[in-house]
Amino acid sequence: MNPRRLQALRVSLLVFGSVCIALGPLMLLWPAGWRWEPHHAHYEQMMVGVYFTLGVFLLLAAREPLHHLSLIWFFVWSTGVHGSIMAVQALSGSQHHGHLLGDVPALLIAAAVLGTLTPRRAASE
Image 1 (tube, one colour):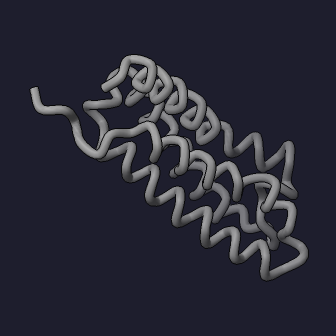
Image 2: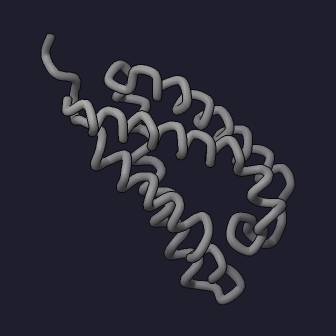
């Protein structure tokens, strides 16, 4: 793998892993872009817990991304699907349009960037 592309993948994993870890504070600081209404505390705790855990593993994967391809591809596909469903939901209700500037583009950009930088499989050794 090209060293510059590998470095870009590492940096991207650090950035997106950090955003996943910061989901809880983002919901508090910018509720229109990151918190869905009606507010359900148990749902939000579950989402924050799942994304926090995923963020920690993305940060760990940044050390040696080529050894964690299945995790990265899980993130790419699940995040792309999640962002697409949320985009449709945000478009269907005027109260959710703020998400089209917040979490929806964040998810789709993360999926696109990592999907572009991540090789389909590790090179044969």
